Image: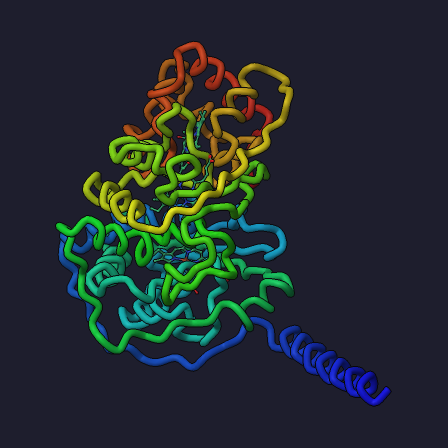
Length: 411
Ligand code: HEC
Ligand code: HEC
Ligand code: HEC
């Protein structure tokens, strides 16, 4: 009896502690932290601006580029799993109030490194990436680009919308996601001739491929990425812009379930074009790393081949079984809706396409070779896989969506 009584007391104490902690989380919301003024002045050189833009195309634009303004004024992150709530990226144009016009170089470095807002001390939720291991030179390049005269960053007074994290997301910011310390020592650029080392840097400190391609966001270890659960073994599912759940594949060297079945050339090609060796396009949120050069992509492959192989075959996305038209079927099966949503808006809007490209042959060409019209867009190179007949059907479907939508709408 005594033993049972003690167990009862222990359970009660645990319940009180847990209950108290949950109440504390609910009351305090996303935690705030002390901030530090960083003394940094980045020299803005043309090389840095160009390199920074290249990094930002793969690291920032898909989240901060607003399909309506075509500037980095922010938008809702529609691929956030619903259990995390709603998140809005922010206006990072050079506008002094709405954007980052008044931020110092040190403020920017502090935020990118630690994940803590330099003015309010608020922790930026997990969906804004942090770069604790990025080389100083890459951080400097991103800052130089943010300060540059790139038209995407031209000051724009678009209002910010506050994110609405769920209790669960706030809870995670108390237990699983913590800010990183600002580095106390310089972080050198890796030796780019050592492809395994360079690839490791790109995959774990810059493009953070492991963050999506491991078992579970909450079990990733950003301070020591190889300690993340199921490192590069895939398995996490995330909704694309049409609501279809897409599972991140296993990209370890496993010869059957990983990318060990691909050659280095096939890997480079898939990442650069968005088209896999079997001719299937990769759905969003995987984006084509269009601004990353072949040496860098090949280095990522070389590194992945050194990561312990995991045997884990992931499920293919489940797509509807029947369609209203052949055009709609192609729009879904070729992954167009993974970015443009079922109604043609999504993370990149098609709503103006009908008016912008009245000539059918031009609209077809825009779908076929978007990269020529818009070098920054991460739309796959569809010219490689779509026949002329398919392109015609898709162009007709795009026009139909424009007519149904009428205005530039989100989601
Ligand atoms: C996965 C989406 C995502 C990516 C990628 C991303 N951001 Fe963000 N960013 C966000 C979100 C969401 C917020 C707002 C978080 C909040 O406060 O709720 C944000 C906030 C910011 C802020 C703070 C602005 C302010 O007014 O508080 C800056 C600066 C910023 N991001 C810059 C960048 C840069 C530079 C990159 C690329 C290196 C980048 N972001 C990549 C989603 C993203
Ligand atoms: C935002 C999450 C995210 C990030 C970051 C990301 N991926 Fe992916 N990746 C995905 C998803 C989701 C898919 C599945 C797409 C599909 O099945 O259509 C995918 C597919 C792939 C594939 C195809 C594998 C196969 O078996 O079909 C490769 C290769 C790949 N990613 C490599 C990378 C590399 C390398 C990086 C970093 C440079 C990276 N990914 C970053 C989400 C991501
Ligand atoms: C990985 C994401 C992604 C996928 C998949 C994708 N697109 Fe795009 N698409 C984009 C982006 C980004 C843009 C550039 C939007 C901009 O300039 O604002 C774009 C632009 C376009 C445009 C031009 C819009 C304009 O106003 O200039 C058309 C048309 C288009 N896409 C059709 C398609 C079709 C059809 C498919 C499928 C065969 C498809 N897209 C698949 C991301 C994607």
